[in-house]
Length: 368
Length: 251
Image (cartoon, rainbow over all chains, first blue to last red; front, side, top):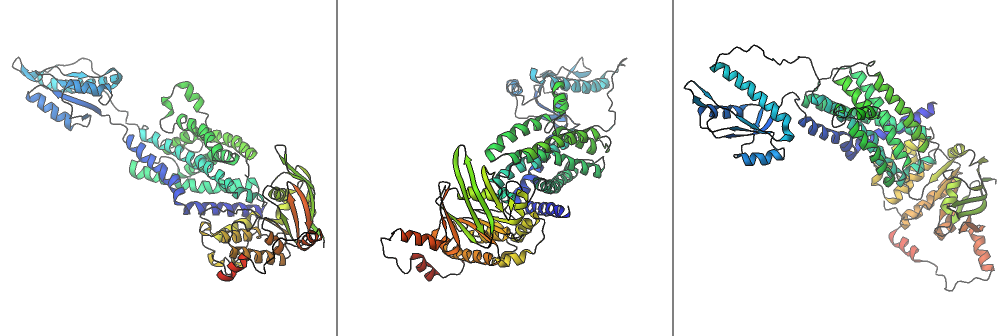
């Protein structure tokens, strides 16, 4: 037993050493997911604030209209496309959804009417495919004008609606992005890695040679799982640190729970890679099958966009994929501060998958 | 002397094509035994069946009294295997390769001592991808001997090596034999067989067509009235090459 442990330990130790000497491997395992993190993080940063891509066409020379245009340009709500000067140009852009809406100030907008105060009607154009932003924009503008109107005409309004934020911490879009990209990283570590490595080791006869020694399949598996676990923790830690520093991620749960959860996640997903890479005789066998298994998981488990956006029946099905508990559990622990007991359902699902996956992996493993 | 490897009626076929056709031979303890034959004769398949990495279709193989097909795991502890083209994972240091192979047998070794025995001590901390072909062969031999096997299999050990590396490898094989290890090797270089092997089996199309000492095989041929057409020179081109370039290793 002690000898067996020494065998496993030596293989694991040398595997990990080899990895950390290999710049290409480090790039794909550690740096590559970071690039995704930067891209998706930048897209989904902030979360709360909304801004509209609009064109403003001012046909009026009134000072009120001039002031409005200037203030709109300073406002964070609008991103004004200054290159558009005619309604026809604007319509072209709206057709392609490059613009959310176009604001037109007619020639008489802001002219002083009845000698007392400026008045006018502003027009908001939007195309049918942008109806939501068009209407949201209209109501924001309406609210603004209500404020202005009050200054000119004192009216008391019997019924009003006031919007108020609950002030409770809610999940930002980045919280979903983070959990999803952790899932993506685990897939990279657990599946893309071994699916490339094992067929190559078979091609060079390295595994066949090990087969002439008394090394057992389980020893080889455990050694690989151990080294991959260490590598995985390093890769996930890099993502975590970047998210905290650059994207203002707040760790709400316990680090110990998170580390244990990630280790179980890597164990489960790596089993898929072991099964695929261990079964395949060469890259040509490994690549199509691994794509067939990996891509549906990436898209259905909430890697790049959250699962709640999917139709309900699909959410039901995708909830049982092995990657889904990885992403859900990460979100629950990191952004919602849930504890060990709360993520039991996720860990249970991972455990069940592990049993199935490793059973298959042992059955299909080939040394050459 | 007693037989350490016994092979009886060994058979193997792929997709209905017979590759090894019921061959029998035995190898004495401490012998260097050669299996000669052209490409596709079944040499490698024969070795792989005895090494317990390829299922045996028919017949039996015993190593040190252990049935290979029935107790392959026990056989693995007493054999060392040198593959045709040894490869190692990149970014491994030489001493780590030996540590790893020893660990596969559950053993802890001093890698430097083994590296010194194959003239690679100064490369202990080099990465395997920076080795020459001959150095890789020597590392591979050291890796096969980490557990002091009783029988050492070498599959075409000198294919692709330059004459210096080849001669060096021959010396190495002889020193392994001196340690009391039985060596079974395949080759298609006949002078190599003549130089190294105590006995050779000549294989063709899955059958052993001759088995004896190199000397006896030549004697039998001559007794059948064979004469060479050309007068044999006292030296050949390889002798000239070695004389001009020296015997020392180039890697």
